[in-house]
Length: 122
Image 1: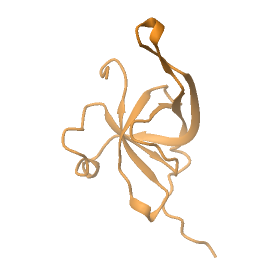
Image 2: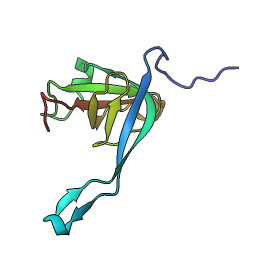
Image 3: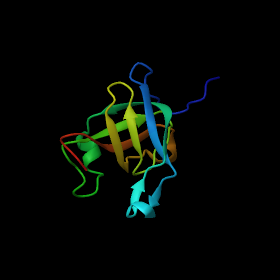
C-alpha cells in the first residue's frame, strides 16, 4: 500500500543549488571598524527558479515586487528569509525575500526571491 506524501517537483526540473553561509566575521578596530568577512561555505540542495504568477503576487506584502523578483521551489530544503543562494545552473545569486508556504500540508517549499546583479545592486 502506498501512502500519499504530497506533491513533489519532477526530478527533471530540479537542479543543484547552493545556499551560501558566511561563518564568523568581525569588525577590525585597527582598521577603523571595517567589517572583515568570515569563511564562506555552501550547502547543496535541489531546487528550481520560476517566474512569479498572479497567485503569488496576491499574497505578497505591498511594495516588495520588483523586476528581479522570482520564486524558487525546493523539495523540502528550508531557506530562511534573508538567506542567499547560488543557482548551480547559471551561477546567479539570489536573496530570499519571503516564504510562500503551502502550510504544514506537505514538504514542498516555495520562496519569493530577488535576483542579484548589475541591474539590482542592493
